[in-house]
Image (cartoon, rainbow, N blue to C red; front, side, top):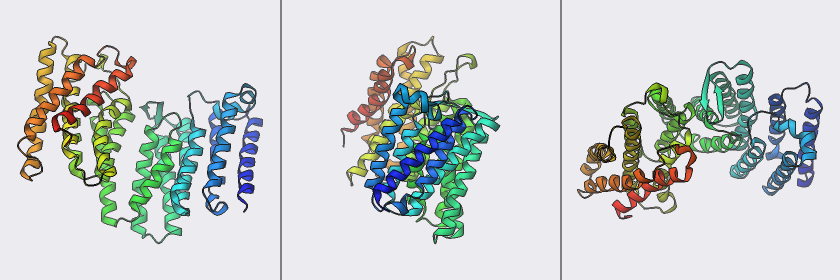
Length: 436
């Protein structure tokens, strides 16, 4: 097909669908209207590998679609006519824009491979819509997210459709073995269900297709035994953080982010990189708890502030092969642990002086991370000087964190939060390690 004819056909399908839903607006609930457009356009976009032989028509189509969607959202005349089709729900969402970007990104990344393109788009189209509608109309068991609430029933519906959207195409159209197909679909479906659970403001429309593409690229070459291990690890991590969630100050979705982050560290790097982060989490869980009436609730940003520095050190070897950044990564985790201890003691032990808080916050990670470092000392990866770098890193971070961290109403000071938590730990790992 001529690419311009293909572009025109897809845009016409989008216009007709929105026009029909606009005409039915008074009879259809806003969420159903949104998801109908979502499903129809997703099914149309499944044809892209056979309609377009190059990526540029899809990029052009994405630009046209986003321009039109922006006009509908921001121009008063169009918004009064079509705005309720996509923007009639109470929550704020940019899902229609992320949808276009997500489909375009997967089309480019798939390089013409129909399976690598269609499976993510199927999950984005069907699983996301099924999860949302089941959650709205049948959801009872709610859990807290940064976007309000979602339901266990909706997540279960999402997983079921995601599993089938992956399992059936792999089984029918690839040479992947039956056991491998089952395990790939189970594991990938479970992981993208977690991704959907923690996404907010429509970002799942970008995260889901790209995430599923990455999972397929990683899982399809693996053996049955390797896939079984990966499925067991993600189930185990989710079970652990779920059981411990009442001992944390994190929202339900933030707890799931912890499990996903741990799985990413274990999957993309080695399990040894996971140990310092698990120790920091264990220290956090083991701290004195807040009284129930005053227990704060932190969203996933609290997790990302802690993980950002660690992931920075983990990514350096990806761009500079041969660089070993495990030592500063280890020190960064220790520094974060010290910051977490100091923040908790200031909150639950108000009678303590800052000096006493600082001493406790310095001693706990210094001793525990020092004990953990013995394993790498025995292997010859750390030398004796590293045992002096641990207390230096923790002390440096605390010297920045304690005076800068916004103890009163921290949510009103996001920059100070990021600087005192993330930047302090990264600088501490650099200073103590000499950037070696």
